Length: 358
Image (cartoon, rainbow, N blue to C red; front, side, top):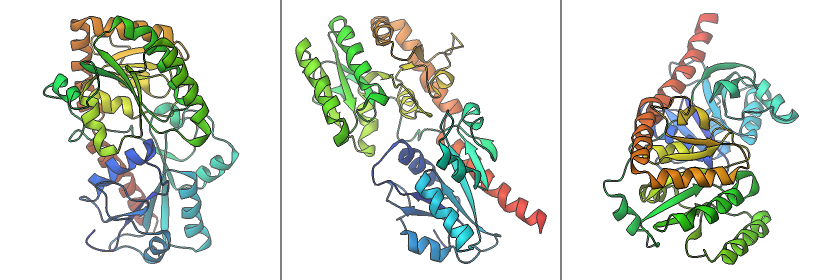
């Protein structure tokens, strides 16, 4: 940031979530394109964060050569502060909100979103649930970080875990993310895949500890404790290396807004088995047999998921096709550089629109 920021990107959640990951990937690019400030909690590769008081102070005046500041928000708490700054403090700002939810919001978020100056939706379906949509921009992947391994077996060996490759599920351990469905699918699949180890990369909140303990007891009953492992939360900088040692990513949530981790897996060459939710069908390209990157199963259907995993990893030709398609799909349609450039166009649209109306 060389001068007073024109764009304030907010990140108020202390935990590193999927929203944090998408914010970080875009902000890391934007810092070389715009005078951008991060507000709230730090994100790797992004500018050192400002606290909320400092961000408000810097927003009291227009940025150089711009009619107003832009606050780009992605969470309820971030919308609230931005609305307070604009409507109560009367600061010269416009608010952009990114919405990924593919369902009707509850009353409070709906009101907050209605107060946005512009909304970016991550899919056409997400756009159908919110007002003021000016652009549909899917999330992208940082292809500099997420790329295929030159030697998958060596990458897996570095993890120190048994077997020759991993089958990975990434996300918080909780029912909504379908962790139990992944475990059941692995219990059925692993006896047929002797070289595989299943891993669950994600934190467990205190309220979900009993859920996790039940899963661990279930795994122990089957004698697969060494082959189905809970890794806890993986630091964002370590996730690419872990993915490179795996041969498939499985995502079986009961609900998902967008779902970035399958895209990150695809960029590393991993075929994906996913439930029919979120944006999974679109980016797995399942409607195009020649370019498909994996398989979609019905929500809760861990038995079919298990069969698809075994079929995929038992057929080298099918695995190779899905893997190649996954890499190509992520490069062609889900590059975070394209996402950042499209978001910047939304900012320019707002600035130019204001100048037209002067």
